[in-house]
Image 1 (tube, rainbow, N blue to C red):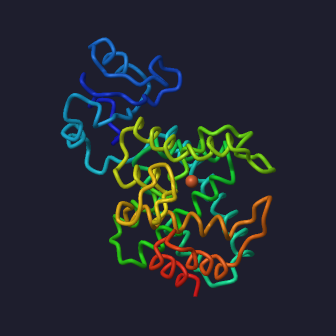
Image 2 (image 1 turned 180 degrees about the vertical axis):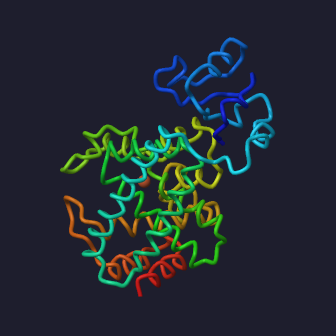
Image 3 (image 1 turned 135 degrees about the vertical axis):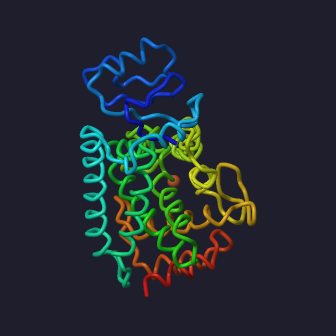
Length: 307
Ligand SMILES: [Fe+2]
């Protein structure tokens, strides 16, 4: 986990993710703070605080933070504007999503609640800035994937609420939804945006995105098993016909099943270059009729969100 640390509490042994000081020699560098010289340089900079990785630090960062003045949670102006920009981008995406989905849905989905769930996912990302930035990168690279991720996060959060999961789990599920297609960052746009039919080799590349995303999250090193599983396994199917591991039935966790159902539902109810959007009831009926691809109980629960 990455935390903010007031500059005056910095010590050797902390792992610095960033120093909030654009003109400073350490900006944009990530490093273990080893020497008194580096510590002095940080102290004499204009930075107010540092972003520090708790997991990568050699000393107890939580103990350092406890020495900070109570209520110390305010981000510095640079971080605040960065987050404000990214949050604004997410809000814009949510607005776009609402406008496009409203016209497509024939049912009565409470978009306010779906939005609140995606909001929770957004809030949870504030505590993991690396992941937060990954999301904004995803938006730049591929708007459709980004909107899809926000929509899936909202749906997953609502479905988790329907299943009486507690607030922390709803938030975690929402975050998993935001991140589930992260691997598409690593797929060439020429393939992602190709208007016509994909050939076999191109399909192979597309189908690598769950593993690519999983590997990227592993590299970030701050991700829960639930999020890793959802990212890697969201294209598995109960009958063993999915990918990448061809898991089946109980080998596929509830969180992954929730993602799969919401992922396919959003794809079916969205307009794509090659197809019209299905209504919510058409999508639910089709998914329910598939022989052992999806968790039918979850399909029905998802359908109940649409009245
Ligand atoms: Fe996917």
